[in-house]
Amino acid sequence: MERLSRRKLESKIMKNKDRYSQIIEAIFFESYDKKKTAFEFHRSDIERHAKAARIALPKNLGDLIYSFRYRQPLPQSIMETCPPGKEWLILPAGRSRYRFFLTDAIELCPNKALSKIKIPDATPGIISAYALGDEQALLAKLRYNRLLDIFTRVTCYSLQNHLRTTVPEVGQLETDEVYVGMDRSGTHYVFPVQAKGGTDVLSIVQVGQDIAMCAAKFPALVCRPIATQFLSDGAIALFELETTEEGIRIAVEKHYRLVSSDEITEQDLSNYRQLRDDL
Image 1 (cartoon, rainbow, N blue to C red):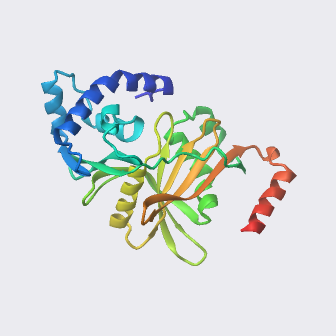
Image 2 (cartoon, one colour; image 1 turned 45 degrees about the horizontal axis):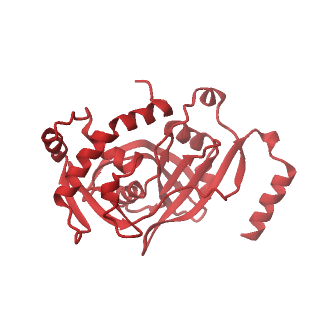
Image 3 (cartoon, one colour; image 1 turned 180 degrees about the vertical axis):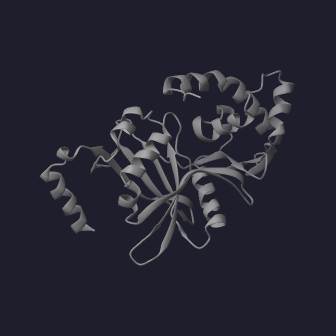
């Protein structure tokens, strides 16, 4: 099936917004209490509330949940119940179950003030010619240009993309790509990669799921979660996340621009050497 263009995807989101919002509002306020910081619901509640409101159901019930987790904010009526500095997240809570969870509001957005590091573009021409600008194109550019190796300073290998599995206490999840790697001391790592293109946004929730997946499936490896997305000018932002006492936070952020080799000047190289000397 042909992938949706960005414009078509935005149109589809706006078309579904009203009915999706009505259903998620009904589910939320059925159990909401200002004293609660978490409560669960079942996927069947989507059908029940849609039927009660005579709303046509989406063909894929999961798309409603996915939309509010990764594509669009929750309805204003729900956001208004949040105390200052807080937000509601929808988390998986087992098979066909989900949980509204009140947490600190964290945005995983690229820092516009960061400089962009030029990298010689090793993407095969045929891949560049047919890349659609979505997450698959982004993952391909990471792979062909060994950006994960450069970013993490670890020799990395792609183990599997679109890993679908079930994790205890989380339920079913999908990780965009999983890399494994080794550093010069012999330490082994696992890098779950979250990639977003088009109108989708990076999600702290998905990072948390990736960390849980690595703990369950790769307990002997050091987990270093990665998030990446295209910037508006085609450059690539890479984040490494870490778990702290305050929750999941950004440990490192770098921006890379893929260019032809003759676009990297002597001044660029001098600047990069200076940066290395300052480490």
